[in-house]
Length: 190
Image (cartoon, rainbow, N blue to C red):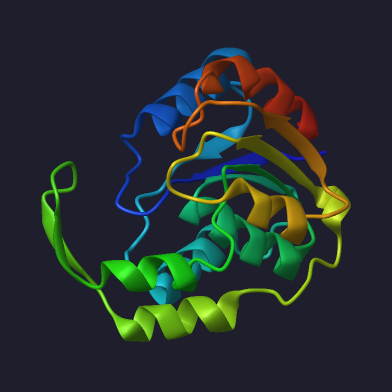
């Protein structure tokens, strides 16, 4: 049974995104005894992984929820510690997508500038597990209308996982709040 849930937001998002707030509110209302966190992740993927490793530590009673790039990072951690992870329209091989977005950006919620560099793409490529060791540890929520990521890449990479593919929708995952109980059930909470 898991006593901790960590929500990982996507690229250029934050702990204040709609999904992060919906998830936090759901867990506060229905699972107040669970240690829930939704950290603001650094844009440097190496620093993001370092933060997550510090946050999780040696715990093994943790479940992860990750959206888009957060789904990729959740996969990297889940493969390291063999935990459950619920992924919403996850990025597969994000270095091949983000390499089209190199440059300097401004995040209005966090009110800070950040850079997307070729070095970050190299780190993402190195982090990507070549294959999943425990595909049954994953629940994928995919929508075929995702305009940012090709959902078919996730179908291929996460073969053997629990996959919930719905037609239409978009990258934000339309109807996400209606999936929160399914996510909680998959997380095997104490």
